Amino acid sequence: MSSTSDKFTTYTEYARMSLLRLNIVRGLLDELKTAIVIRGISDPQVKAAATNDKLQPKDLVEFLSVYVKPKNTQSATGNPIRSSAAETSNPRN
Image (cartoon, rainbow, N blue to C red; front, side, top):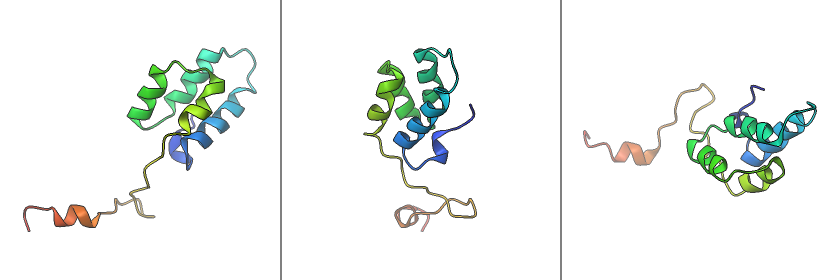
């Protein structure tokens, strides 16, 4: 499964859709389902928290619901959007 949390608006939505897809495959252990979902989380802090909590698949959606994904900081062209705070704190000005 090559899905990552980047393609979804929330971590909850990502976990729910991933688990639905994984439940189609027969014979996967719960630990493997959890590991696959956690592997696709792009934020290292959220990934570490989920790994350390030793969650079962049934608990993943609820656990991830407390984490808010940061707003996308790239424009439609893929270029990073510069915040005005970064521009005013530039010491070279």
